[in-house]
Length: 284
Image (cartoon, one colour):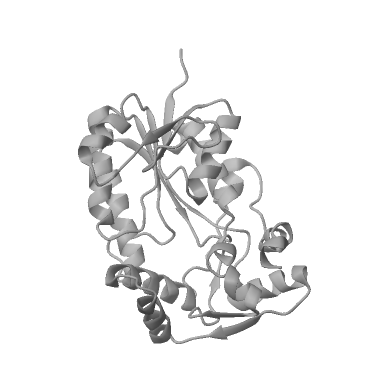
């Protein structure tokens, strides 16, 4: 019996690229899905455009297991409907949805409500599924805050709120474990986090210890963060979603520490201190 075909959408992004690498290393029949259709880590590429339902029919042809990661763009819920409808029509037998911590379609918090609405679309599809809900990425300190860290001072509207940051590699390890043997995980939802919750100040201290200098941290009002995002040209929908995420962190709602990484992969998630040590060159 041949190995099932696994399509990883968002394959050129943080989680997707690491996941394709893990699945390929495990000998899985993996296809890297992205708008460009490029090959990733030796896996063949396939064009996936969520805003084009007709193209999704071709993209999902022959796929038995689907990793669904959607871009953070206006109309994301409609893109999710397109993807889930196409998966159902194509006969996809298992769908792993990359969601977000705190997802709840009834939440008053915009980002949690958005993730929860999309989760509900997956649940209602009738396709066997698992929901993986990661907390904030450690990699944000490189990709989004790296310039400020190099300059010496980080400005965030997170106050003293703690978040159980998780390394993208650990998210990919959880996703790969599930996709390679989904049966034990069907119908389950997992919040995945790092091993401890840290404030921005504590996380920056861990980075500072590795690069040999203290990094300043200035908590800014959320109104100032919103104004800054608008000055950068972000649309109102994206500003609203990111602002709600800031408020989640500032209020301490992202501080939950989950055992899911250990339970699913058999090993503990990477600590922020280890992440800082391994990536010190990024901030020098």
